[in-house]
Amino acid sequence: MSNEDKDINLSFEFFPPKTEQGQEKLKAVRTQLNKLNPDFFSVTYGAGGSTRDNTKGVIKAMREEGLPAAPHLSFGGDHEETMYEMVDGYKSIGVDRIVALRGDMPSGMGAAMQMVYANELVAFIREKFGNHFHLSVAAYPEIHPEARSYREDVRYLKGKFDAGANSAITQYFYNPDAYFYFLEECGKEGIDAPIIPGIMPITNYQNLARFSDACGAEIPRWIRKRLDDFSGNNESLTSFATDLVTELCETLLENGAPGLHFYTMNQIEPTRSIVLNLGLSE
Image (cartoon, rainbow, N blue to C red; front, side, top):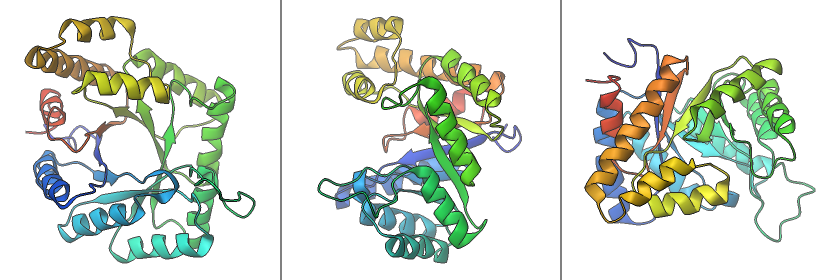
C-alpha cells in the first residue's frame, strides 16, 4: 500500500554536499528514495545562510529532475531584498514549498535591522508571495534547548502558525510519549495544523549521541545501553536500530501522526528499509 493510499505525508531531508563526489552520491540517493513516492524532499540551510548557494544548487538540480523539492530558508544576516530575490528565484523554478526557520545571526552582524525569527520569515513570505508556498516550520516536542519554559516554546510555535505557516516538522525524538504530550499542549493553545514527526534513523551511534546532547534531543537510557551492547558489531546494531525506529514510526502512525519526515543523512539505508517495513511503499 502506498503512502497516498494511506493518506500519510512522507518526506526525506538532505544536506547540501560540499564536493562533486558528494553531489553525485546524493543524486543516486534521491533517485532511489524517490521510488518510495515521497511528497517532497527538503534540503537544509546552514547557520547564517552558510550553505545558501549549495542548497540552491541542489534544489535547482532536483527540480530539473522533476522532483518535489523544498529548500530550508532563514533570514540570518540577509536583508529583505536578498530574501525576496531568493524566494522569487525558487518560485520561478517551480518550488511551491519552503521550510522556514529561525536564522542564526553570523558573528559581527548587528541585529537591529535584521529579521531573525521564523514567524517573521513566514509573515514576510506570506506578504510578498501570498499563498503560493506551503510553509513548514520547526517544532520541538522535547522543547528547544534555548526555550525559557515549555509553555513559552509552545506559544512561540503558535506564533509561527498565526503568521501563516501550514505545518510543522519536529526535531527527532525516540520517546513517542513526548510527541503525543506535545500535541496535547499544542491543542490547548489552539494549534490544529499538522505537526509531522521528524525521524532520525540510527547509523553511527557515537555521532548521534554527541549531536543529541548538543541539540537537546533525548536518547532514552535503555536505548543507549542497548546500542552500547552492540559496539563493534555494526550488523547487529543496524538490525536493532532499524527495528527500533520502525516500531517508533508504527506507534506514531497508529496513534494519528499525519506523516513522517526522515533525516536521511544523505543515505539510502536504513531509511528505505524502515519505509518498506511500514508498508508505505512497494
